[in-house]
Image (cartoon, rainbow, N blue to C red; front, side, top):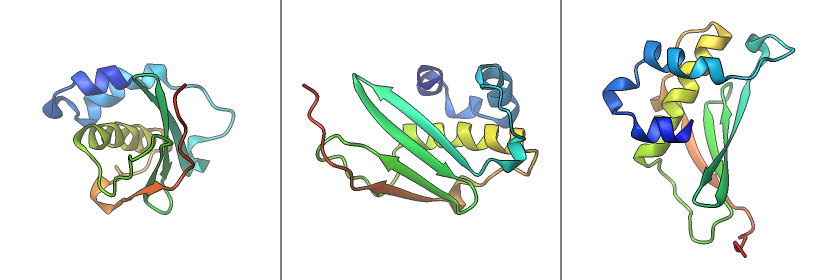
Length: 117
């Protein structure tokens, strides 16, 4: 999924295109999507895992990253693209109006550093 997003032009990240491209890759769930308030998205970049937690109810995006020195307070371009895709898909599956990324707070939580040895 990440490679598809990185290679996507911003103009191609429109709701209908995102849903058509990514919905077939979503896992089926035993509960209604309307009950989902958090989305957990692990991301692997160059042998290093990070975890994004999208709190849809409280409008918070949390990044858990154990890489030393990576303490960002604002989202970089690829993170915004990723968030846009996740929020389009969440709104579509929950059958609610689209979420506005500008209304979400972005937090980088302090986690213990993990050397990649």
